[in-house]
Amino acid sequence: MSEYLPGLAGVPATKSNISDIDGEKGILFYRGYPIEELAQHSSFEETTLLLLDGRLPTEQELQNFHQQLVANRTIKFHTRGMMKNLPPTGHPMEMLQTVVASLSMFYPGSECLTDDDACNDLNYIHNTTVKIIARIACIVAMWEHIRNGYDPVAPRDDLSYAENFLYMFTGKEPDPMLARIMDVCLILHAEHTINASTFAVLVNASTLANPYGVVAAAIGALSGPLHGGANQKVLQMLEEIGTPDKAEEYVDKRLANKEVIWGMGHREYSTKDPRATILQGLMDQFMEARGGDINPLFEVAKAVEVVCEDRLAKKGVYANVDFYSGLLYAEMGIPADQFTTIFAIARSAGWLAHWREQLADNRIFRPTQVYIGEPQRKYVTINKR
Ligand code: COA
Image (cartoon, rainbow, N blue to C red; front, side):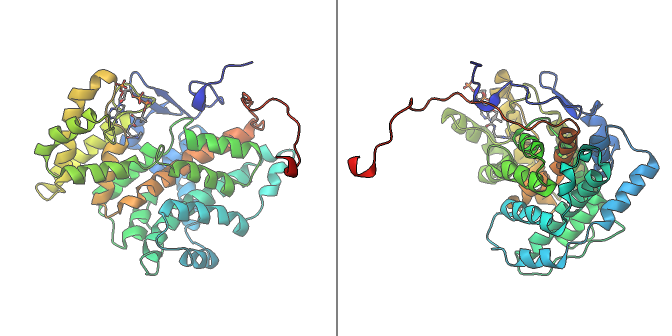
């Protein structure tokens, strides 16, 4: 009998060409490209094509992809109607899972996945991927208005993916610096090997389920507090601390109580998460550009990180991607309960790259188990129990 490893920790569940992590050196690659280079030079659209196709696109390919995304920004009247009927108090991740799952009824066609050559039907796979990635950001932005009792803001054709998302979300012309920061945040969250939500994609994809259901399953997995959502907790923590001079006392008290410091530590990295380093750099640039006109919580975050490095570095615990992202989102006018939906928007690129990779070499997932229940026994009729 094979050994049971809880959470499949360390068990390879697939082979993949998409991304790789060197947790000791703190390196993350998408298709062989270090995340730092992509964050510096690429856009979310280009990074998405890289993840999907395995290579950087030509200028024409990128332009075509941008146009395809723009052409798919319109949300059907019935979907909008459905959103208006959802409870405004529901969590945005619950809304997103519901609405993305419902898209399969508006865009049928996944039957082609059962054709012999379905895995080669790159047209269906690509067009569906575009439909989902283009719409997921619009749905999140629309929800912000719908849940507050307003009509959603219509998309714009002249804006990039990140700019259009911010425009539809806030209803304001996006600040160029914040739009670029959002673009980088989307790049940084687009892919991260086989985490829980990506594994959900593989399992669902392997049954040839419709891709909207596949992504909805991943959204469900991401919604759990052990996966997405730590950046919301970071913001609450920083608000609770209030001022930089209280950071040391707060951290020490939590550590003495055996409580975690939110936004610190990562199963895969024993050094600082490279995405946190990039976000910290962006935050510094942003602070410099804004001069004194800045959310005081930025200084609190810096103070917390200094104390944590002193107390936790010996355990290999450093800031992770969630430590600075929430602060930056808050600065863009995004409420904390929408942070995980932004994670889902970005990760839809990685999820769909894995969906495609799974289809290209598919075998249904059917792991085994270690049975620890009763041995065979005899049924007792109800009057004799
Ligand atoms: N704050 C304080 N201590 C932490 C810590 C944190 N955020 N993360 C890990 N540690 C400590 C553990 O208490 C443990 O200490 P011990 O050896 O004295 O018992 C040691 O570091 C090893 O941690 P472990 O729990 O084995 O790490 P893990 O790989 O199982 O957990 C996380 C990884 C992400 C679940 C964990 O670091 C965590 O809960 N972080 C906070 C939540 C968060 O930011 N999540 C987002 C991840 S992107």
